Image 1 (cartoon, one colour):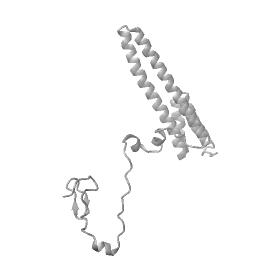
Image 2: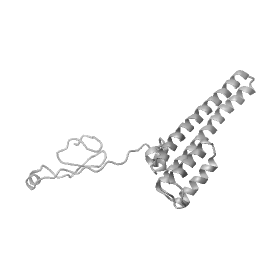
Image 3: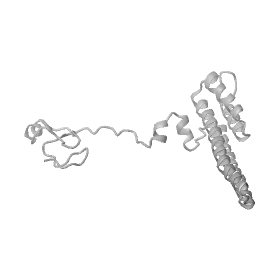
Image 4: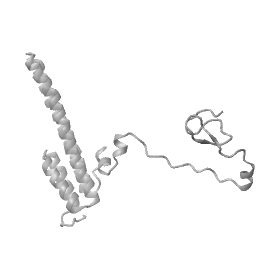
Length: 191
């Protein structure tokens, strides 16, 4: 196993971060993440503790939103004296919260098992964010395609080719070869 600068096993530090996440101890996760990011500065460990920290933050935010929505509705129905609806909403809030906690435990167990083997936790979406891939997750954009290079022509073909690329698309302004009928950028018919 890989040892850290301070003699700790790197997978052990990652496992501790996920263990604090399961125990709902965000301050513990933050302290482990701070230690890994500031003191250790190991790229693999940084990705693991960042995933644990993001998972802890996401879980806390989702629970907060659920408590606000269901709690507000339950208080409203209590105020209008619909006690059965109030009780039902409180029960739904507890069930949803319990299911989310079970999902958190399962994600953390899978991450811990992978970390023990020295592999990346690989949490969905969070592993990409931890790796620095913010644009692909939030903007929904694809990375730009590689430019297409034109085929190489022999000198004889070059002298006999029709017209040079002097035309421009009236719609998008892209250069268009002389024998093209449609713009390759926007599809507008060339006049």
